[in-house]
Structures are given as structure tokens and as C-alpha cells.
Length: 314
Image (cartoon, rainbow, N blue to C red; front, side):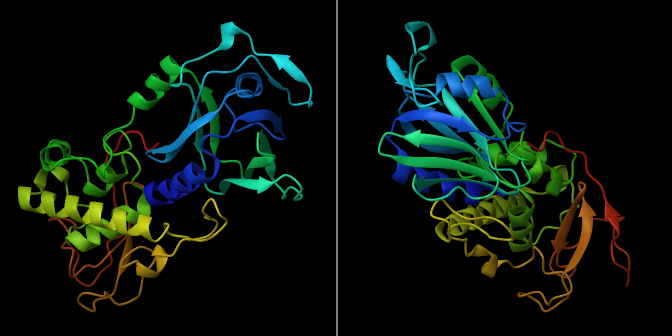
């Protein structure tokens, strides 16, 4: 599932490609991943895409006020009306799920299979959402509902300060892996970058956040931010289906040091990377570099299962 670097990559690409364009019409196929399909069909035509930004693992297409008339999904025109005009805080919220892709395309090109939403833009191009498994989400949200939606997420890991990060981590008796994945604590971090950051910081994923000292917490914060920025620079990790807004895969998977490397040698010490279940997720770590907490060490045996309490995963 796309994490912060992948979503940031797509958002930046869309910002360059479609910001400032007006949505003329909307057509839909399957809509089971859309909160309110009718709201999108009724509210988006006539609105300008002011900007595209990332919020955690979500993209927000910030929308202008609607103009007086716009083309409907059947190609005709319809009156938007003053009653439906919203401030620029209204947005289209998009979560790509596991296989979602949102990208502009020439209208003349045939639609790919599993194209479920098409936005006709005022320059003749189409913004198309494709998703074979439909595990994503799309919703039109006005100012108040959007605020409520975003309030449930935690701090942005790229912006969090040392003091804030230490308070969040050391104030909770949960596994550090669970804390990194908890979207109400940090928004945007997923399995890949949690494992990569913990490996770089030499912290075992099953350690309790409350038991980390201040030096370890700060090393982890810096590792997390450095890895996320490097991954963004390389357009994210393409593990299976991820493509950016230009249809290109990311490159950061070539730089993974822990994630997906079970049975391979640790780049740092040469020990064998292992995999265990921590916080309900597969976690990759080096047993030599990332020492297990007391009670979890088993001489000559692989750690089978380590659980941790976590909040919303987003």
C-alpha cells in the first residue's frame, strides 16, 4: 500500500500536471469505494483544482468555488447554483489503496481496464482513477466534514520536532513498531519505512516506546525523516503496483536495508535478516544490530510472534 513517499510523489506530479485546471464533467464506473458518488457528480463540475497536496497517506485535491454553469456527466450543462458553492477548503480526498492510480491522460487514448472515475478537464485531458482491487477511497468533503476527517490523524513525520516525537513515543507503552504504524500518532508511515527506520536506528521493532531513552528516540526521528526524504527523492518504492503520476515506478526499493530481505545478510554486520510478526504486521530486522527486548530473546531460535497495541492504522 502506498505510504508517505509514494503519495507525496503522486501528489507532486499531479500538482505540476493539473493544478489550475477546471473539472468540466465526471463519469463513473464502479463506485463501491466512493463515500458519496452523487456528491462528486454534482459538486465537482465547474470547480477548479486549486492545488494537490498530501495529508498522511491521503491526497487532497483542493477545490475552488463552483462557477455558475458546467457540463454534466452526460455532456450537457447544468446550473451549479449559489446554494452549492463552497469555499476553497472543500476537497476531493483520495486514498490509492493497494492498486489505485490517479493520473492525467489524453482523452483520445482508450481507457485502461478498471478505470472507475474520469474527470474531464478544461484543457481536453482526462484525470482518470484506475484501481483493479478497489481498496482505495474517494470522497468529496466540504470544510467542516474535511476538518473532522483530518483531526483523527497524528503529526506529519517530516515536520515533527524532537520534543513532540519524544513525547509521543516515550509516553506510550506500546511496541515502537505499532507506534510508527499508528496513524493517530504519525500520519503516513507504513510497514516499509517503519522497518527501514528501525533498522537504521538499530532499534528492535518489539521494544516498548516508553523504554526508549531520549538519545534512541532522537536517532529514530532523524533516521525516519532522512529515509522518507530519500524515498521521496527517488519517487518512492515500487513493490508491486505503484506508479507515479507519469506512470513511472519508484526506485527506492533498491535501497531497502531490512524490508523484504528475510534470509539475506545485513548490510551493516552480515547477520541474517529475520522476519517476525509485530503489531500484527510482518517486520524485518537484524537480530544482531537490533537487540530484542528482555523476555523476547531466544537463543538459536527465531522470534515467532510479538504483539503490540496500536490505535487507528488509517
